[in-house]
Length: 230
Length: 37
Length: 226
Image 1 (cartoon, one colour):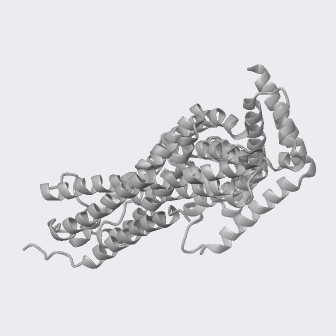
Image 2 (cartoon, rainbow over the protein chains, first blue to last red):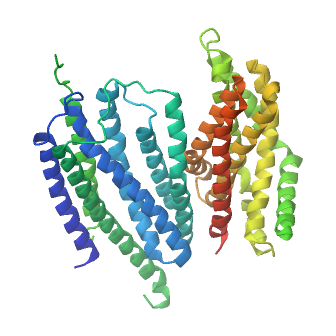
């Protein structure tokens, strides 16, 4: 089965399972007493955050591997992971404030989670813009690797800066966010959602990688045509 | 006397819809971009 | 090692001579700084907000913009006349090129900050002298952070189409953590708090600098090698 077909299959299955997650979260998971139904946004927001972070981490690692091994497959993977990461960051960026409003009383707050969301989105955006601005494939791959690695290294510093900012500027808390220890059914929904979102990530990246592969092959075919070899 | 559960289901629906739109939307986008012309 | 430093310094000298001889860059950066400070002053209600509360933020926003201006020009010089190729062909290591650029940019931004800080103290009536030493320390550390990453990125964006737009977009996420620590440290210093409070943020700034300067040295060759 080609890469693309496999990617499409995985995505299809993941989307079907996503529907299952939705049903389970919305109808079959208990409502949290103090936060109300809005707490359930958690089951979608947190797995998206995980996927966005995973995407960023893998972009950085792909960058390191590309610079060390010069294998264009890593560059393609970075490209794919960054675009998919942007999609998940967008989910984070929209569901985050929608969650914050009923729970914290305000659409935006500079707490660690939401601020990290913004950072991730800006990093992905920057990565994609840089790729768009460079036409030479070799240069583009090297530049992307450099930016990806810097982005990855930045992540712990983001945490360190936001943490301090937060402890000095207490957030308005209307309702306390959910405690780390979740009762059984809720934990299950969350973990199930994590799994499905990760699968969705894999499906998306596989397809996007295939797209990059087609484009690169087309470029090679077109560029080398003049000499007579493909 | 326990207070009633907050009535904020609207936010929940909005967030779930938003997430679905983005994820399904991206899936559709990928499908169309990868279709051989 | 000494050779790397020597070459770097020669490069830096060349850049600085070009910049300061024409004087347009430093003058426009200085004017820009004054303008930003003025706007901030007119933009706030003096009866509602004390200068000392806003002061750290204002100071750092001003310097961040000034640094951005400097960085945009960093590789511009080489781009004209394709001097960058000449530079790469010269028998100097990539590390020298990066170091030279870094030093030149640092000196340029430092010059802007030297002009800006007294003006800031004057316009906002802020007692800078008692904490001048530590404050200069904060300035130095944060500036090194911005410029280290900025020099690396400007090497990449210089050859792209929308360089002036792209560089700030790429650089922004990297400037925010040092900016946050610098603002917090400056606020602590200006409020007369003990040095030990600011020390934590200075340590973070130093850690950021060490990590990113090292990373930039390691990655710079990838941005200019063929």
